[in-house]
Amino acid sequence: PFPAVLCIHGGGFRAGNRQSYSGLIKKFAERGYVAATVTYRLAPKYPFPAAVHDVKAAVRWLRANARTYRIDPNRIGVTGGSAGGHLAQFLGVTSDVAMFEGDGGNPRESSKVQCVVNYYGPSDFTKSYGKSVDAAEVLPLFLGGNLEQEPRKHIIASPLYWVTPNAAPTLQIHGTKDTYVAFEQAEWLIERLKAAHVEARLLRLEGAGHGFKGEDAQRAEEAMFAFFDAHLKK
Image (cartoon, rainbow, N blue to C red):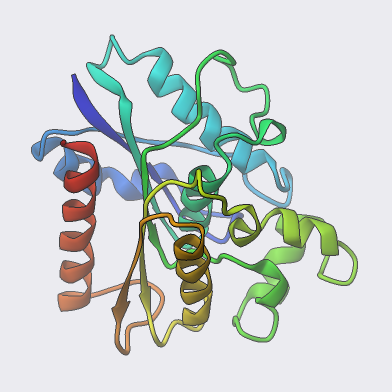
């Protein structure tokens, strides 16, 4: 059986589609992985935690169908960018939180992932306003209100507040000039994971924004593959 990687698209929780990762999953396949992408429900029609329920159901589905697709159910990683990075990280820190499983099928399977590569995903929604060019537009749609209206949801939806020693090893890749998700969001997450004695690395891309090009994109991709190889190809 092969290790597997689930790829989760971005789009501010309200847009995007899984086809955007078609090129990447072919690269994973060439490197000896079973790669999959997931469609999840989008805001504002389906606010938090619908998207979380869907990506957890996707991990459970991979395990339930492991034999069919020659997947090793003990070697499943996850990656995503922006909103997809947030959802990937959420999988990494809430494997033992029953309230996020939803009813998307295969309830006997685990939604645990063995490692996470998080491309510029937000970690703390309570500190996004004023630091992101679109947080005031995006987060009320995803969370059913702004920070004053739904403070508890902003906390519950933030991966930072779910970090425990059981969290999955994480590589966070983030540009220092990101205007959509502030670079400090990555620093907070990595510091919290390290404080919990979880393996955590931050690839800091100087001057890069939200989405990488050229050498930055190549560095990020090489780091991602190396991280997955180290954790899933043992």
